[in-house]
Image (cartoon, rainbow, N blue to C red; front, side, top):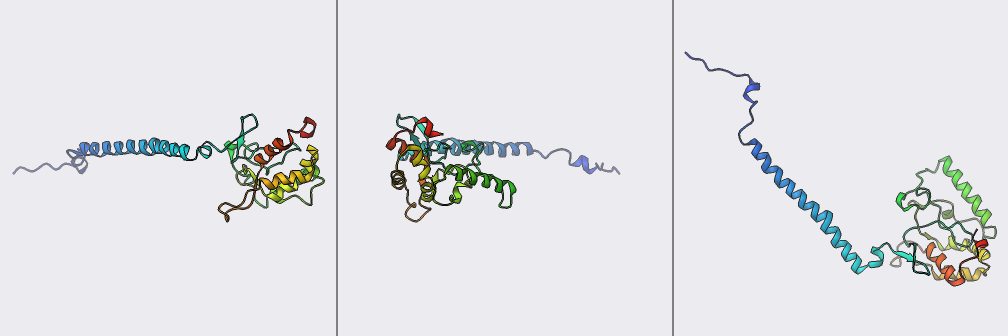
Length: 222
């Protein structure tokens, strides 16, 4: 009697089932087509449509809320703080973004409340503020000593702006009441009447000072 040959299990399963490769191709190509269509729709068409509507409906905001100077040149953005170290200008909050006010490196110092380095930084800022503002009314607001979370906060509270009025007025040779009046004029209210706090945009404030009283002399800018 003839006996059937029994092959090892590894040999019995070594040959792929007929049609398996074709089935894989049938699944692969639809997946690739779907990925390509999704990429075009969400990565190209959708951003272009949204950008187009934004430019049409809100052109200034969509372009970065740029601020222009007296000659029409771009001097900054309403959304981004920039450093003002001269005595004749209001100074924004300190910044830990990059080397300071770097929009490419937005962020805080990530130093905790128990950090010795943070205490040293705050102490140095406090000493500098008191030295540069000898006629200021009382101690400086805490926001002038500590950096914001983004390092690019363009606003100050009205109180922090008014605290700097004596220094700015003295550097410009203008009565403090006139400087304070500009701060009050540019004070922004809460969004929708309830959201956020009252604030002043530092860049807009400094530009308003130059328009109202002229650019300060070089000696007063230090």
